[in-house]
Image 1 (tube, rainbow, N blue to C red):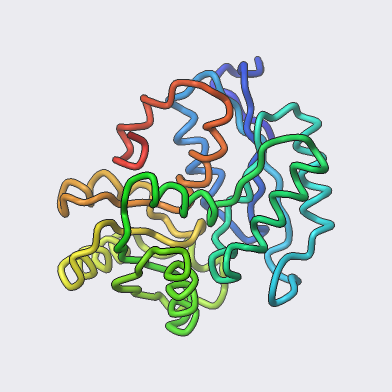
Image 2: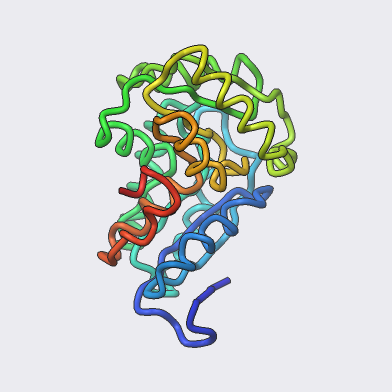
Length: 243
């Protein structure tokens, strides 16, 4: 699906977004961001949420999706999903290498883009709010720790069905974020699932807490936008991470 703020006339640039099959948030957040960037379209494709090996990805669906996105002449491709953090980031690096080798396009993932963003902003101590179990949250925290990012608190929602993450009330996320900030005094808050509705909370929470609030879905889309070279200043209305 290709979207454009110009009706049926394609914009000058396009980004390619791959998302999990059970996701209901990535497309909406991406379109909200592109609503203020008239020069860019988004092309979306889904890959299976399940069926991957425990230590990586089932690569054929990703390869097929990447090739199809490249046929729409996108400028970049992003796997807008957070799974790579739990895997230790290296499988995401291999995934991006495969996509670039197959298509010739720059590729990234939400997990890798998050590491880059946190480092560029000097954010070393984060409150990470994730959808899964406490054990999963601890594993993700360990993976970030190995990359030099300390998770000082990691509230989890205990969600086992990825689709259900999209139905979490934003007020619940807001409450958890405020509690985490009060308890742990982090450098930033990070909503860690591209199926959690954290995007719309960023600016409000930043005003309340005085620290950056980061949404993983927006991080992935922002990373996909950078290779287009368009002016991203209009995105600053959504939060500090766009500055």
